[in-house]
Image (cartoon, rainbow, N blue to C red; front, side, top):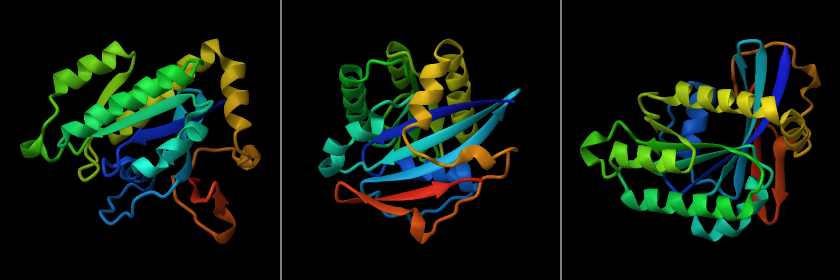
Length: 221
């Protein structure tokens, strides 16, 4: 079985549900009481797609403006950018576009782009039209997804799209993907032989401090 590694950076305004989307996928449950991310959180998980195992190393960045200057060290050498906005707040859609502009200016290597409109369950408060968001995503070469963390709508398909996109990217840039991502952080994946049900483990040794902010490391397996 082929292993493909991908570094995923998650970008978007505070409160759009970036962490909730990731934890919904990994933990398979909804947690409405999540504190704002400080600095960044790190998650890892695996997807089995046909005869390949796709290992995602996910950097979930803080949405607060005061942490924006730190973002480049997380999206640098990323293979995937997940760009999240809140369907009920048009301002977060505008802010998401600014992240795209920043990536276009600072990232030269090919990336898989996914635009995610979250909080689909709040349809009565919707401010961003699906067609407008879809047209924008197509314009920048991204896939478009609408998700509800509460109802788990669109979550599985979102991560399947990311995994499939990485496989396509690796078919033309295999060395780039495997080396660029794996060297970004040593997760000791050598002991992984089979796909397992995602769980989250947190321990004292998985806490580190970088640039004055806390990074919490979660490993799914």
